[in-house]
Amino acid sequence: MNTPIIETAHLFPILHAKLVDLLRALEGPEWEMPTVAGMWRVKDVAAHLLDTQQRLVSRLRGEPASPPPPIRSNADLVAFIDRLNADGIRRYRRLDPSELIALLEEGASVFADHHRSADPWAEAPFGVSWAGEETSANWFHTAREFTERWHHQQQIRFATAKPGIMTHELYHPVLDCFMRALPVAYRERAGANATYLRVNVAGDCGGTWYLFHHDSERPASVAQASRLPLAYSA
Image 1 (cartoon, rainbow, N blue to C red):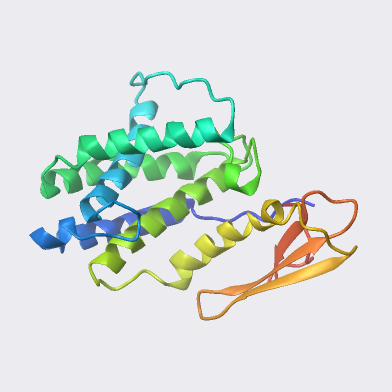
Image 2 (image 1 turned 90 degrees about the vertical axis):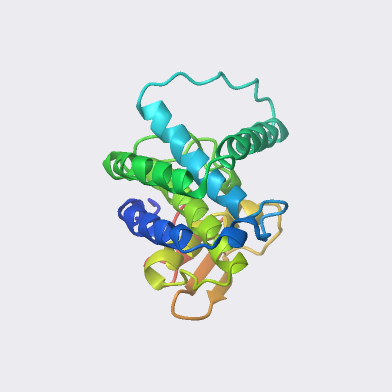
């Protein structure tokens, strides 16, 4: 069965507007407050959000990019992404906050329009590796990008004691996307045929998901309770 799509492309402008309002409201010292993102401070997280946006914008504008190194393993991929992130943060954290915000605003519509215009079922440029996919459909790649931009903004809000963005409209798709990692996370776990595992997230933003296993499926299937039939191929 086909996987029900997680629609997030239309949410990027809403999420971006909240980010800009948040950054504009920050006082000077708040930009250097620590976050839960390891060694990254608030300005580092903001610089990372700008960097990931600008990488896509530059590619869409046909600007040349340095060729990636050979990727022979997941460790190589992680190292390459870590290096890209570190380089981007160094580049953009040097900016004055007003310049950083201006660049975020300048590229936001290009970023959002790209994801809105992409064929949801066409092959994405990058697979969602944490869900065990070497290739993914555009809708899943877009949802993954949405989770990135949601949780990094939430890190800034948490660090600066600003109101969060834990709304059903914005947070539920994040949970739904992350649940798609359950099959690969459980793929080595033994289970009796026709076993269900229920994951319940309480609250207005949450929901109930079921992980389904039967002997002929590797990996298992995952489904949200509100979507029937219960099992679909992950």
